[in-house]
Image 1 (tube, rainbow, N blue to C red):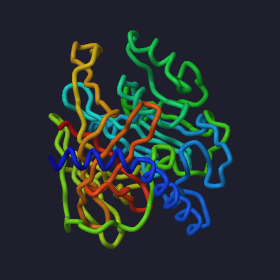
Image 2: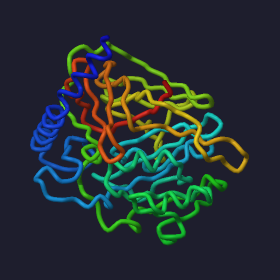
Image 3: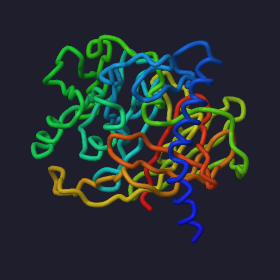
Image 4: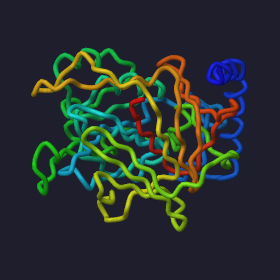
Length: 326
């Protein structure tokens, strides 16, 4: 009964949520007075805070390897949003989304999955950098509303590092793939907004997520005002050695089902459903907040709300969204 009431409130308040989210985003942008990686600028997903159109193609999404030999990754700390997905054999892979700033190098770059195509539609024709895909998936990528950028399309934008073995050594130089960036945080395109924490948070120092063959740990650091990341029990670091940290971590509970695709060894590729609705847990400012999520269509952003139906604001800075099977 409570769940139905919350669903009803979400439906009744959908327009109010969108309006308030836009207001919060605009106020945050005005208060910051600048663009960049601070995460304080959150426009409507199809324009800047001033209403001027922004080409979606200037949003860059990079499929990043996330097994032991691929770590430490390069450029993850500059992403606006980092999505974590389950792939074959219970492992994980990362989709890093850039718009406010783009690092000189990102990687290691790996292959795309069917899940990416639905997930990325909320960004309005982004550029997807990936190493390749299985032959049966390529036609879907070619017809998807995005700008596909495998090495064959932009060979000058990719290089192989000599200090790692293939396939964990392919890197992207974004400056050779994009004309410029929007200077606007990609979170705004996905329907996310920033602001002070809502009431009702549960003080939380650590939180962990387990996939069948991968683990993620988040530990609150009051000094850095971030959730410090660990993967498979080891601190996650940038290429320069600093531990990765996120201002907000969203545990989004979704349906993860078998897809119609398999890897070369016959393992099924899981499909993560990002359209629909469900529960979420938001970690920010040393506390955990219960939330609901709703995404009506693949072309719409994802709305996160508090249990009473109000928009859920996120802490300014990088957002990690971890998809967890419900």
